[in-house]
Image (cartoon, rainbow, N blue to C red; front, top):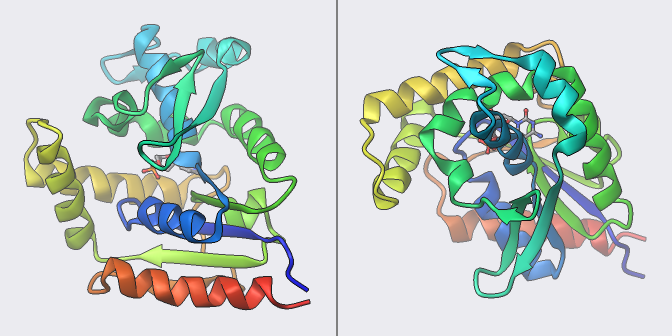
Length: 231
Ligand code: DC
């Protein structure tokens, strides 16, 4: 007997969590949910509504505005994954900009925001058959997930990947700025009091500094099939 499972993929930023999660979801015919995109969507809302100026975030107003923030995922068959929408607008490209990356960790540290987004994530995963990536999926959102993966890679490898991605999108950035952002986000994500990034005891750690995309997928797909076939 096969069973439906939840696959939780957590880890540091720019470790290719979403690449692995998308590949897995496709291979298993599961839904893929990028929870980082949800925190990015809230950050984008804050930027668009002038709730972030200089280095100050108007947290009080943002929390008041939470009821006006509707985040949805809609499957794009051309791209093969679900894109994120904010109040009906597709913001998949906008949320990857550096101006969003620069503030998202601070936004993700606000407990009221986490509470709302975690509730929505649990609802999406209630029927299982989902691959969800983030920072707290195996620890908080789905502590009983059947398969938990914790991904890491050296900061330099991760910054180089993100730098090349941004260059490819035409952003004018320097490698040093990207590395600084990666290190800063690691620190905030791991040290915040609300659901910090941790590796749970039952998570399987993968360091993919020198692993190919295919090798990594094969490895995790084996683990997933093993869980699915366990009765
Ligand atoms: O995976 P990402 O880089 O798109 O995530 C953006 C930010 O959101 C990152 O700083 C960590 C935070 N995040 C989080 O706190 N919890 C999640 N489940 C997903 C992302």
